[in-house]
Image: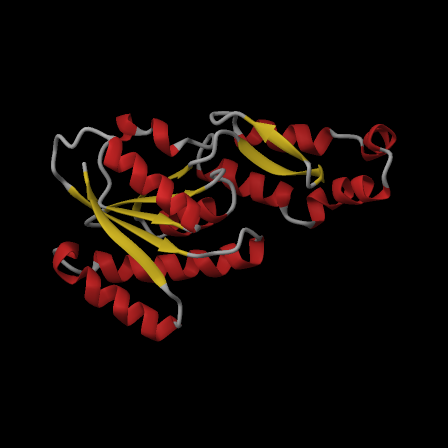
Length: 209
């Protein structure tokens, strides 16, 4: 493959890892990251997510959530909704997602701490807020190489069904980009054609390393 790709969402769990997994299987040079301060997974209620530090292995998260006793936690939280949420860990795809992630790489990584990973050619984000954070972070770095990087935002809702669709669309777009010798010359055409074909709006910009 010609180019080096990065997939970025908030917690490096669902959307970025779905795309990372698909691209890795197709032989792309791909990494993935999150931009949040912490890694967050659904918890017993919306106000009580499971919070982890970046670098915590996916396997550790899987084991901790799998071992949780729903009955004991129901007593702690005292709500049928909390019990329902905990019983849904397996059904709602959290445990299968973590198992999938652990087969792709060791642990979630934070975009802002990735300078040692080198320069990327194309960065995909899946949420406008994440796109803005990546653009700002690259703007604030020292531009030593003056190497261009395309930052592309494909808006994808943070659920498993939409992540699967977004991952396939990302793979399609990456295959189009990888088929050309100079993405800088053709990126406008490729994205315009993608938008027409898939009826999905793309926001993108060019930054530098």
